[in-house]
Length: 354
Ligand SMILES: *Cc1c(COP(=O)(O)O)cnc(C)c1O
Image (cartoon, rainbow, N blue to C red; front, side, top):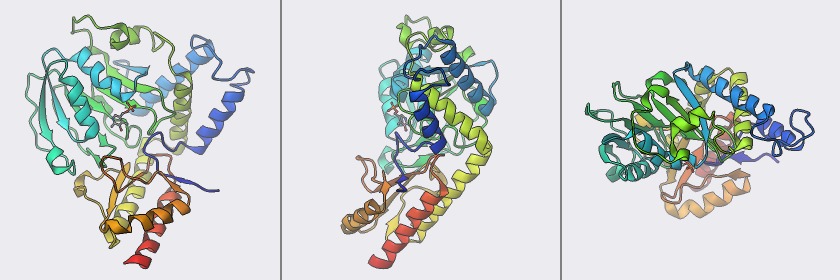
């Protein structure tokens, strides 16, 4: 039975990745052991960490100035780990969505937060481009893709202030100049691998200026010194992430995936715009290529629409509990056919109910 998985996270993974992970749970690399049973200090696992780091850096074009960490606590822990390590006095933030707002809330516990733009009173439907980053900021924090409302930053500011970016829901979905960022973080469960691990990519020169006494697990420097095995990491999630990175390379890399993602998103937005029953509320320039949110203009039809897509083996289309409506998460691994299938369902629904 074909299932069309539009879940926002944990979300769809490439079929090959799921298959290979499943095999490795039974017998990892012909060791006779499960990947769940190997030591995180074994050669087998060190090879996984090394390979994953190598693939990330190659894909993003990052040199030895950058360190790659595999941490736990989700992107959520990064909301406080970032200011703990990088904030001396003040930092600038963009409030572009619910996750960005949460990041700001945590940062305020560590110092002064200057919010350069807030989309809160316009329900986060667009992202301001013209904001000024004052020169005395320790860093500038932004969220490249706002998973819940469905907006995406298409350009990033030119600034000498270190840019810190939450890429949880669009990492590895497009080609960017990744060297413009001083810190990138993303939890695995959206576009990378199984849940339970967060990738943090840091330009090492931004560390070490803070003389605060930071608890060990919260200290990036200590994780770098320990090659991400200060304590037991999420072995399985790192392994599934490595498999996904290999899959991305086999697909042709970030540029090829970006084109595919743009195509999928364009088809779906076109249908939403054309279809008389649905609407998308996001400013066109800021529409996300990863999370497409839409609403029925007539809420009374929701019951009918829900019945139909659920019957057709579409899953994960419900909007976030804060927003209602619908959200199709169309991450890297979601095949074009699933988008086309959803579009057919929407067309059929229009024929019946308009
Ligand atoms: C999902 C998400 C988070 C939270 O991730 P956790 O791993 O659950 O902590 C943070 N930021 C963005 C942009 C997200 O999409």
